[in-house]
Amino acid sequence: MTAADPIAVVTVVGIGADGWPGLAEAARRALLDADVVLGGPRQLALLPGECGAERVAWPSPLRPAVPGLLAAHAGRRVAVLASGDPLFHGIGRALTEELGEGRLRVLPHPSSVSHACARLGWPVEDVEVVTVVGRPTARLAAALHDRRRLLVLSAGAATPAEVAALLRDRGYGPSPMRVLEQLGGPSETTSGWTPAEDWNRFPGDPLNVVAVDLRRAPGAPRLGAVPGLPDEAYEHDGQLTKRHVRAATLAALAPAPGELLWDVGGGSGSIAVEWLRTHPACRAVTVERDPARADRIRRNADRLGVPGLRIVTGAAPAALAELPRPDAVFIGGGLTAPGLLETCWAALAPGGRLVANTVTLESEALLADARRRHGGELVRLAVAHAVPVGGFTGWRQAMPVTQWAVEKPYGQNEPLAGTAGADST
Image (cartoon, rainbow, N blue to C red; front, side, top):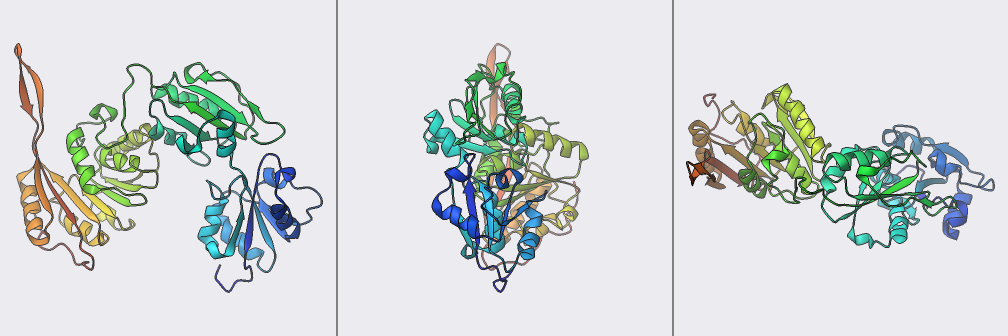
């Protein structure tokens, strides 16, 4: 679609389970005046007979079909039906991306979250909201924190049982759950509070929201909201950036919402996983040449609530060729592979950060030379743990880690010179 297309404005109308009677006058008028109304079958069925527009149901998958559908109805008055607030996990986002905000008129309706919080007496700003509509239920794991309140936007009637199973598996079985169905409509129902560990309700209405008052079981692992999760949180074969070094590495990478990380030499995926856990909008690609480790990274990502982690199985730098440009790069292994450091530097967006860790003298020499040429900070991270020594206690030193962290200057796109042709380890 371009600015010259005949469709000047598409009106998006939010509609609730209360259907036509619940719509404001402006929303009703927009639908009555439309030549064609696009929407899901459930939403289209809520329109009365007096709404004489052609009704077109969204196909599946929806997002790729949006440009063609809009083009097919060019020159007509187009309205779109959406559940609740169209710009809250709704079709409004896809339409804004396609048309631009100047060609979209949005008439919102109270969202299911607003309805649910009103029924529960929960302040909306204090509630964590996670949608599993078209997304894995595993996403919930990143939102599990003791004594927080969670609302899950369900994908269907089976979602409450899936939520209960995940809570039990992640050590939150004592959490009371409640299902709110057909919110705002004449058939609205609400279940009683039931702990996830005792959940045995049959599937109900597919239009539902699951409320969870999170409670961690005694002895269950405590996973904090900042980088540096316990090493025991990960499945690994020894290829794991250990907890204290991992926290320092994420601090140097400095993730921000919406940014993309390349995690090169993924190992167990811990750096990419904790980058993604810092904010739901963060993105990450991990590159791992060992297929068994790549599978392990996938399991860790699912377990820790970031199933959106993209995993590329292949050897760097060749495996980096088709990846989108990163805002940050972490190199956790393979530094002496010919061309790796130069490739990562060249791909990095200006203002982006590159962090590389090593425990070998050969790779340390590369990092020292890179710092001499391009600046940045070179640090040595040493961690010791108290362990039994006979009947006493002493320190056991872990291998020290040398870390180079640098920000790429704006206007600099040349390769990182002076590192090619190094010997492989």
